[in-house]
Length: 191
Image (cartoon, rainbow, N blue to C red; front, side, top):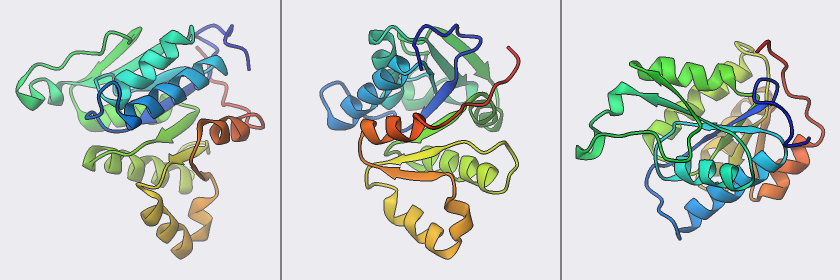
């Protein structure tokens, strides 16, 4: 896929993960590399719009010449004792007052989901995305679980309910994500 697609027709990849990593840390670099690779492959990189893996994947996408979307939320307005604003690599911000509306927007707007290490927020996002895809509540799309952080839980759930793992890809590298996406035809929605 070419990075020459217009933002209106480009597929969207949503990256979920921790707000904690800083530049120079391995998780930040991994998020940067994923954002960079997805933008080079023609995807608009979407995420929660703040710092950590969100900033890193947006930064990677921008360095690759790509576009970015941040889905922010009022609930985090004074989180961590400071006002949170969209990261400086965010091209387009969509803001919600309600966290469930925020997650729904990320689910509905995206063609691909990528989950990195994170906390309870990322866990809740993974649970909702996986439930909606597994139960057919939204059109199926790939769910990438990167690294070993979520792997034990995901493997256990798939072992108990094999059909739920149909669209889940346990990967370690950016190259594995791109290999799956080479054969994937993103959803086409009206602009």
